[in-house]
Image (tube, rainbow, N blue to C red; front, side, top):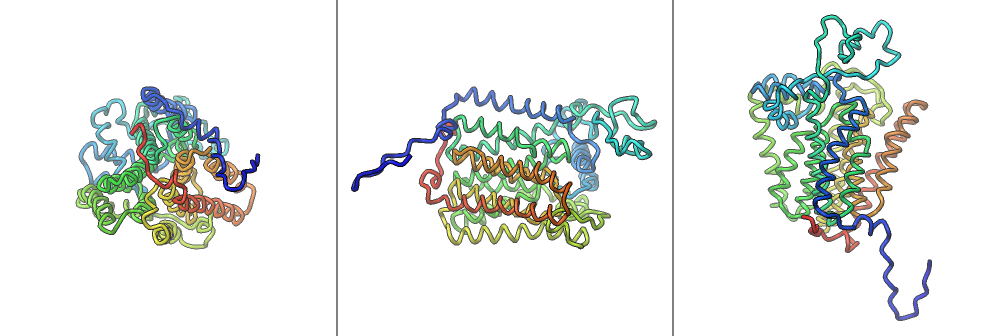
Length: 455
């Protein structure tokens, strides 16, 4: 409703919007902590409903076998059994739990009660069952080992990844000045509702991605509080869990005040990575380089997929190199341009979270395949950005629905080129949302980092 204001008089302040007031309602600390604990339980319940973590793919074995090897002190075997390119961060962080609670969570493999797809119930069913290791005795193949249920194996340790993700996201929300109230509960509910948080475990078993995003959020939170040594160490941990942590780190380096601070952040991050990776490299240099490269895939062939890079007629190794290197170049360019225009104003909640979001979304622009857990980092940062701005998470919900459900429906019914074009547009939209938020330094409420009442 428009209100006519007499000449020379100031317009009355607009009443605060209902959603903004809702997420700002203070919540007692004990109730918030109870909600944190409850979120772990709900996360596990969702995994139960989805049939448990995926135990059959090499993505699972690439973290559980190295964890077992590390728990026995065999670093060489740990690198040799890293079948897909992953740094050793997640296995290192979970190996102590395996060592102490080996009889409960020590098994690197577990059985699975998921139904066998109809298409695989023919001659190939025996091979499928031997990989899947069903829990039902009637489906067992003679000679197949008997594996425990997932909650009696290393799969249960994914709750540690969930804890890191939640703590990191909450740290970022509080550093943005939006913590201590109902906004924290909204954020936790959003993380639980985000399909990618459980997709990363139930489908491809990538709990290391959850940890990496959590550590990256915590690193950005410490940057907003100007604790630069902590920023470097947290991003070092994020990289040790997953290499894409380099993308939001470029945003933080652009926002850091001065080259001395940037060198401090980069130096502590690099030092931590060297200290951790050094013993593995000494044990097996070749396997360690393959694990850190993010592009080494033995025996991969050419396969066209519905992404811009995926439809190219290139060798799989080349496409992987494009998909991993070009996002770094694009993120560096975005960060440089943002620094050139914003300078010191980048070190504020909306600009910094938005720039990190844009940098992470460049990964999707150049991705080779469409995997649901790839949406995790962008989905989390969209959600955090919306909640930090005290706005309904409409961008996060809309983007996730389109990418997780709409695109899947479209790809199954359209040529590869159509799916690739839609995927590119959706990824570019995420980049644009982040870049628009970078301009929020003009908004006084969002341009100044504030200490949360709960911090």
